[in-house]
Image (cartoon, rainbow, N blue to C red; front, side, top):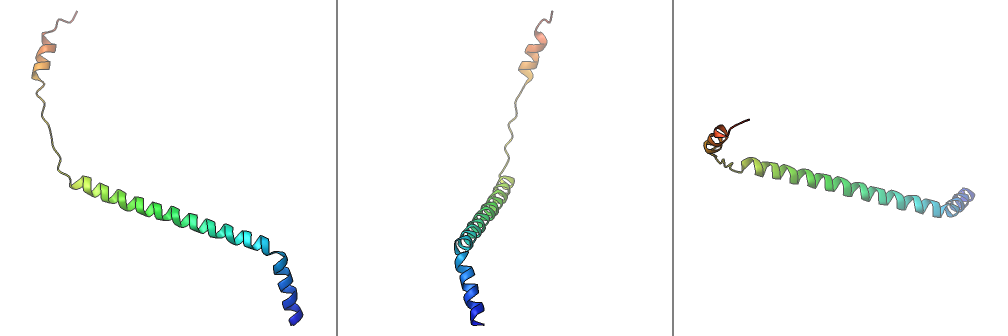
Length: 79
């Protein structure tokens, strides 16, 4: 039993750099994924809030009297 532990320790020690590199990579990827998900959720909440704000905003209409232009264009001589 003791020899098995020693062999396992030697194997882990031999591959320690590779194991640490893999752990660092996985940690970085998990942090990056959390950031991407967080930005997406915040963007979704902000977009929903903005749409709700724009939906409740009063709409103003402006009327334009185009009769002067139509009279002018009808008086022009088309040749």
